[in-house]
Image 1 (cartoon, rainbow, N blue to C red):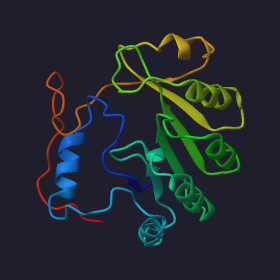
Image 2 (image 1 turned 120 degrees about the vertical axis):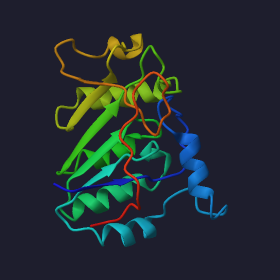
Image 3 (image 1 turned 135 degrees about the vertical axis):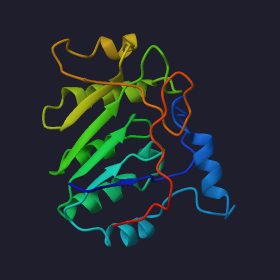
Image 4 (image 1 turned 90 degrees about the horizontal axis):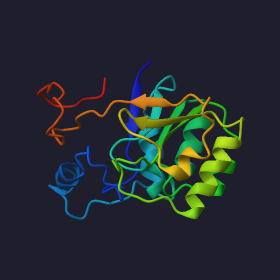
Length: 196
């Protein structure tokens, strides 16, 4: 099934060490230093309404999607059109209100990248974060998966919540745009990026 990735804002606050954030930001502002940092709901609707309904909408791209306070409205809009939505998040910026809205949706997966001991992500969970994480973990109606990188471990605050029988996804670190010296780079395909 075809997919489209949505980047809701520019310059992610998490700065995962494997993400080419600096290169992305530089490229984004290259031709227009006044380009908007946040995607507006209007721009999102204009774009998404041009995409066939059978395409999966991934809220991922190069940022934590919930940095944009319009993100939950964008997710709801896409889902209410009958689209399947994948939400890739660290939960940073995610609120209890967002949780209430997501729990009412039908066609979605919530994929939560959890903080870990190797600190691939640059943030420390707050008490509010842990409260929301626990609420999601304990709600069987939420369609969720937890992700951690291979060769890493959960931080104690997360490990004590997780049931050891719960299946979580071990995700290998991958090179994104040549940001990691210790991993082979993906194949580069020259040429323009075009929509089919």
